[in-house]
Each structure stands twice: as structure tokens, then as C-alpha cells.
Length: 483
Image (cartoon, rainbow, N blue to C red; front, side, top):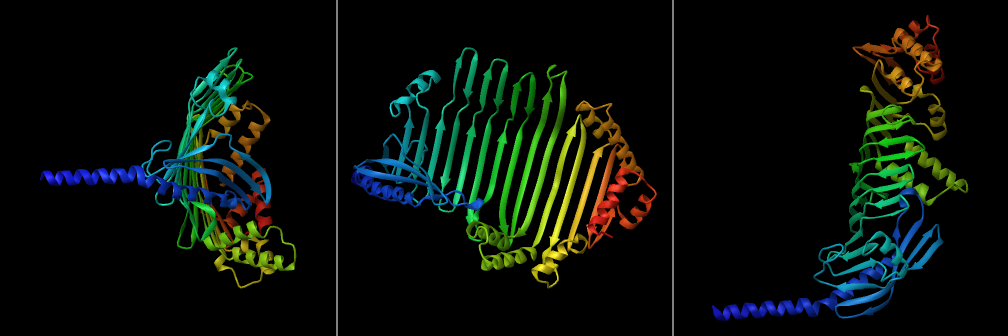
């Protein structure tokens, strides 16, 4: 047993020696090769049909056993034109793996940590002293074993004051895991406060989470989920105060089968604007519980075709390009599109309003016509294969409360609004449901229904009315050719 223990100890010692002494230069070679590949550039503008490139270049390598140093350049181009090329004023140190820790932490073949402080950039000396921080920022890059990378940014919390004016930066932390076709990002901004005399601005904490990836069927878009949460902001200036409460926005995109699906959800707890008489007494306007939930579905192949045409072709320059764009337009018209506004809501002084909308265009049901015939058909929406379903509900006192909060409680505009609502109730365009007014409109196969009644019946009833609301509805129906 004693001999076995000695053998195990010797084996551990040999392995430790290999890891600590033999492997670092090997992993250093792998890490330097991976960094040199960055000169191929990173495409950052494809999703917007642009030709933008940001390239990070490492040069003048001085390779050591446990670490290497290099100079670093950042080049940016747009549309083939160079925007800037600058050398980072501090040489970078690449620490060789395999055991790596730092900013960011983890295991990999090599890591770089770049500290921006007065020792690396003398011009920061006065700032470091004024803000009371050891370093302005720490930037890190970890090259993983699987070919991916982790990037970290850490900017400390700092503040400084001068003659009663204050500035406070709440800090910034972010870590991103990068793979060839995927990015996972988590970051948090600690907020910002600025005050000058009697004016001030306060931006609350903001967090960001993103998990996005590339799909070969949609090469110009990053798909996945992005979520932003914010504690809101407050701005006081010239005796007026504007305030927004907690904000949450989530965007999700993906491909299911052959259909591209995008959804945006957003919530805002409240918005308030106060006048010069003080926040509590002079409130001019306020909304609460604002929310939106919107989704879009469309053919992934057709959307990719359109985006690629915009990105690569640009403006048609000849007959061939025009014919190509015409073919693309016909493909787009043959697609099925669904737009859903499942929720659009807000409240004013506890009086809520809620709307929803479903719009479906069934391009795959269009007759076998050429693009010119389809264009003429599009001028008459009543003949297109589309469906619309719209719902609206709001408390009866909501419009009057909104007008009053804007200072128009006894104005001509308020009286006109009350009159228009009474007319629409009398014409059964708006219906009373308890304390609410509701409206339900449906359109399908060229026929429109209002609150469950066919349009011709509603139009006959409107024929005896002379209200502005009735006239506007009749003109709209005639313009669209709806029966």
C-alpha cells in the first residue's frame, strides 16, 4: 500500500508538472492562432442590410513560456470605406492556459486582461483621483477549449462633485459567451445620477439578458431572446418633472417549421408628468399599467429572400434587376402573414383601456395572376384574402378624464369628444357593457361586421344619422369598397 501511495503521489506530481510547465507554451500557440483569426473581421451590420465590419488585429507577438505580449489595433469599415484605425495605447498580455482565472473567470487555452488606469494611460490620472477609483475599467477575454470565447467588462461605481453639482455612475458589469453562431450575454448597468443647480436626471438600474443564434435559413438575422429590465428614470428641469416607472421589454424570434415568428412584450408601470406647481398638486398627465404584446408570423424563406435582396442588390440599376425584384415581390405576395396584437393596454386614474387586433393575409389563396394584376387587385382590399378581428374596451369616464388631465376639462375639444362618443353609442358603433364602452369589428372575405351585425344593416341605421362619426365611417367604407 505504501508503494502504491508513492506511485500515486509521483503520478500527481508529474501531471502537475506537465500542466504547469509543459502545456502553457502549447496552449499559448493555440491561443495566439485563435486571436490572429480575428483579423477576418466581425460582421456587425448584416441584420440592417449594411456592409459594416469591425476587425480586431493583434500584431508584434513576443511569445514567452507562460505568457505573450502583443500590440492591438481596432479597424472599422463601412461600405468598403475605412472609418478609423487606431492602436490601443496599452500592450496586451496573453496568459497561457490551461488553468485560467481573472476577468472573466473560467477555463481556457489563454486569457487577456486589459486594465485601463493611470499606470497604463497617464491621461486617466486626474480622473482616477477625482473619482476615487483604482481603475477606470477592466476588460477581459477568455479563449475557451471548444473554440468559443468569453468577454467581460467591469467598470466600477464612481461619483464626483463640484460646486454643488454631482455626477454618479452606478457601474457596469457584462459577460458574453461567444461561439461561432451563438451569443449569450448578461449585463447590468447600475444607473446614472446627474444634478446641476435645481435640475437633475436619475436613470435607474438596467439589466440585459440575450441568448441569440444564427440559423442558416435566416442568415442576416440573429434569432433568440433578448430581455431588458429597467428601474425607470426621473428628469427634473425648469420646474417640471417627468417620471417613468419600471420597464420590461422582451423580444423573441425563431423559426418553427418554415415560419418565422417574432414576438415583443413590454410593460411600463407608469408615466407621470408634473407641472411647475409641484408634483402632487400640479400633475398634468399620468398613465399606469401600460402593456403591449405583439407578434408576427411570416414565411422564413420569403423573408430571408427579401432581406438578402435588400442587403446585396440595393437599388435596381437595370431591367434585369427590376425583373428580379418583381419576382421577389410576387413571392412575398404569395406568403401567409399573421400579425397579432394580443394586448395593448393602459389605465388613467384607475380607468383602464384594452385593445387587441388580429390581422391575417392569406397570400397562398390568391388567384394565379401576374404581378401587375395582383397590384391592381391590391387597390381593392375587399377582394383580398385577408381577415381582421379588432376588439376595444375602455371605461366610460376614461376619455373625459384624459382630456381633463391635459387641462381641457371644459374646453370645446372636450365637448366635441363627448358628442362624438354619444353619437357612436346611439349608432351602436360603441356598445355599453356595465361601466365600459366596447367595440368589436370583424372583416373576412370582403364583409365587415360591427358588434356582430353585418355592415349593410349598420349602414341603414347610419343613414338616418347626421353625426360626424357616422359620416366618417360611411366615407371609409365607400373608399375601401367594402360591402
